[in-house]
Image (tube, rainbow, N blue to C red; front, side):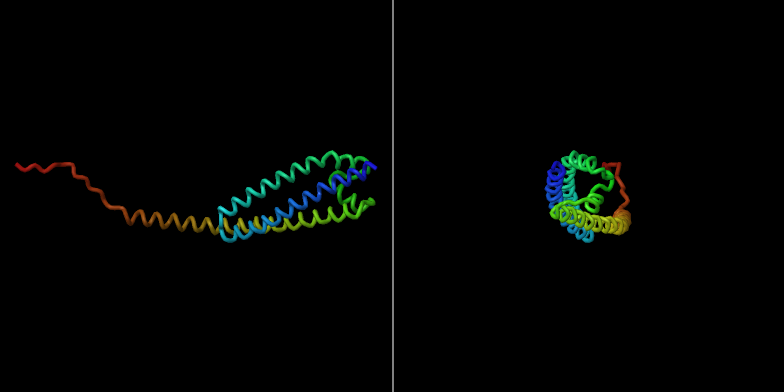
Length: 160
């Protein structure tokens, strides 16, 4: 009986996490565009939003810890792969399975996009570094072109 209650609590939390992960997925897609367009302000805003959502997910995960540990202990599951083992070897409600698979799917999609974003960042970083070098070279040329010899008069012509 306690297992069913624990599973329901975990399922409800997974549903909340699913919504948060979907938001993260959407932000990651927007992040891809911001990286491609070198929109640094937009990128910063998106990263801040993602950070806030990750904090919410962390809080939800902490609230699950007690129930996960209890399920793991009662059903003698491996702590590192408890969810996979639970879904594959134990009879669990269909709604729990659907929720868990949806959560896993959105997390895998998020992982893929974030990996692509990391590659885009690396690619753009080289591009931005080249632009920065060009800009510095241009500034240096402009400075040397605009320099004028400075001659200061230090005498006063006195006419008698």
